[in-house]
Image 1 (cartoon, rainbow, N blue to C red):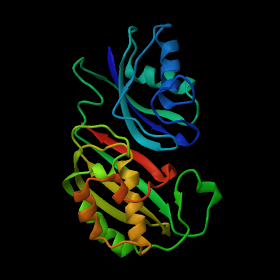
Image 2 (tube, helix red, strand yellow; image 1 turned 90 degrees about the horizontal axis):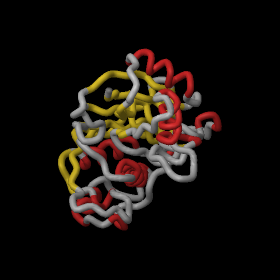
Image 3 (tube, rainbow, N blue to C red; image 1 turned 90 degrees about the vertical axis):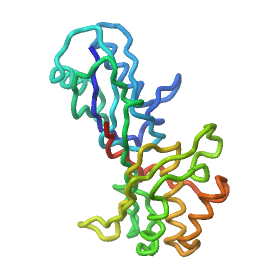
Image 4 (cartoon, rainbow, N blue to C red; image 1 turned 180 degrees about the vertical axis):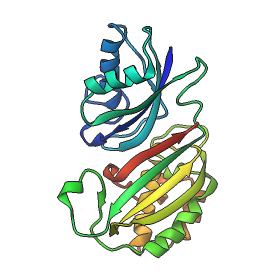
Length: 246
């Protein structure tokens, strides 16, 4: 039987989602638990995509096949009883053998959180501590240049090897936390994302907010298709995979 899980995790103590021979990862933890549930038979998980070290997820998706028969609700309970407290299975559902958690993705939404106020040690692993005011109005203007289909090579990981860097940002928005106006959240809804793409886009937005760049420069940076033109990569702590759509 093939199952699709929706999970949340706190990535602050992990070396990313993808399993590694050494180092603590989300996939390693999931597969250790499923090995027990599946009567000692190894289980390979296929996620919607990987998240980097210290990046969080609100609704990451993944599928896997089990040789045992178990209902979705009992599987959810079993996994949550064995997983560490910083990983939580929110939903389990049965899917067809043709379903693939990565290849069937139609869109994803990422959010990035920034604190412009006083440093908060409690939130240090869950929000980027910029701790200085930013020109939010100018950042909102800059944000709109990312919408639509573009070649995002300038905003990919420097050593990314792909034949196609074209991606579509369906909507890019920014809003302030209603409880704390010093905290802003940037949202990107897109059909696909390159590695480090969101953090690189946020990096340039922060430079715009600091007055170091003009929002219109994003046009030229996209056209350059050169990672060196796009500035720094924003810290991972503020990044969340919010949702995956099929």
